[in-house]
Image (cartoon, rainbow, N blue to C red):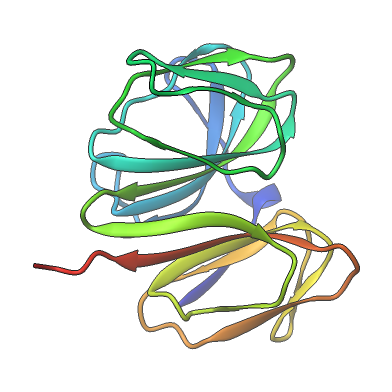
Length: 191
């Protein structure tokens, strides 16, 4: 199954702590809550300093999309990072308590969360043609330029996600200097 999305029409949900909001692009299984997802991809707006929610057993990757960025620091000292360069993914464990300090005004970031031991995946930025559906699941979102997927032409903020059993769909850049956020996800092998 392939599902297209447009960030401009994706509902925004405020955080409980009032420090920002999240727009969920995809979650597996569909409709799973924050405690039951296997993997989840979202775009968040960070408007104020404060703690990140802890997600025990979850591996996270975060990437700045726009804005001044944030400084992330974990209580255990393993994470101490300025997330201030757009499109540079940072991986960290969701188990640890992470505090977020603003580096200026609000910023927007792209987030991948996968349930450790069940799924693995990676977030990258590419400017080359790709094929959706080769990995068991995944998601892509246009960052710059226009991209063709079959009859669809996708522009910045638009994309698609897929899950098991999806036919392969080629994505090709139509403009010079294109950029696409790309995630491939696969299940961990069972013992």
